[in-house]
Image (tube, rainbow, N blue to C red; front, side, top):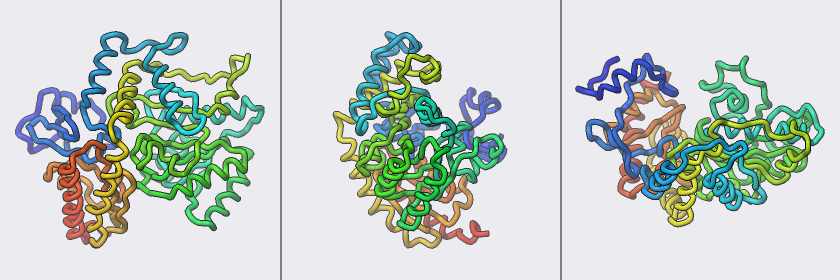
Amino acid sequence: MTDPAPSRPSWFDAGYDHIWMPYTQMRTSPLPQVVRATQGSRIVLEDGRELIDGIASWWSACHGYNHPHIREAVTRQMETMPHVMLAGLSNEPAFTLATRLAAMTPGDLDRVFFSESGSVSVELAMKMAVQYWINSGEVGRNKFIAFRNGYHGDTIGTMGIGDPDNIMHGPFHGLMAQQLAADLPTNEAERVQFEAFVAENKARTAAVILEPLVQGAGGMLFHDPDVVRFMREVCDRHGLLLILDEIMVGFGRAGSMFACEQAGIQPDIMTLSKSLTGGTLALAATIASARVFEAFLDDALEKCLMHGPTYTGNALACAAANASLDLFEREPRLEQVAAIEAHLKEALEPCRSVEGVTDVRVKGAIGVVELTTLGDMYWIRQCFLDRGCWVRPFGNVVYLMPSFTMARTDLSTLTDAVVDVVGQWSARLDEWTP
């Protein structure tokens, strides 16, 4: 383990020999930065340097770090009841949060099942969809139509509905259940082809699952609301459920509170996480329509949903989520997203003329510069660190997903850094091109 830093806290050197870091080749990766604190849109390092966080802690810290309203709500809840099992018992934060989510999500998405992570919320949606058909008397409908470049999590079930050929999921082909992969239809000819694919496979399919408007970890790829609307129409015509994974885009990230609102539709099941607690505590929600929920109501126990994470409805996390929803109600989050979108569109546009840049695109508080190839991602990451920014490119994209509360000066520093680093990357393009 090597690092030019002159000193590190004792816990780091002891712990690094035992911790397993996410998405990290620990033989070759630089050592992680040592974080002492967070505040607003800043990450404070052990040596006193501050980094402007350009990706809001994996897209979750929508209100910035350490918002006092969320902190106070969590503190109050900790003093009375951090957790109690939800089977046979109840707690006010979970019941209140379920009520609020049912009221704010589109249509009759009325039943909320809580879990601890986005991946698990999607697996729950899959279980709900399959059992919906079983309870309705239709057996054999246990497949899902998903899309190439999609990403829904890293658990075994969600890997099966993600892009089967990416670096994260490719090695596990023999482990994952084989699902039905399709290209996302973006024009009329592709829609005709996709609907024929659905018609051919509908007898064995439980649901279509889609990340609406933005395919996130698959490459930050955008599509129009018409695509989401078309999915709803196809599912209705062929009798399939529609699951929308709004874990990344929900709570304002794509410009509306929920991405499906831009298409004017509601899914049968929606999954939420990331910004649900404002990036403070692990919590996810799988929200089902009245139609789906009613299929589970019966005198027979076996028709209920047999699922129950230990921390489902965790009171502490639900208190944080309720406080986060307060902030969406009290503070102008969607207006802030619109201002960020306008800034990203103007400030990132110079990248479009840089050699090696294939696209520049912005949607809500998401700004993407797509490159022919990323080259040395550690070099690029260090370039951002040298400019006081925390930006973590992946695949072939450099992207920003800042907190909605970020100051304009910090946002300008981030976008200036992107333009500068992309320019430096382009100057070395021959090194990155095989």
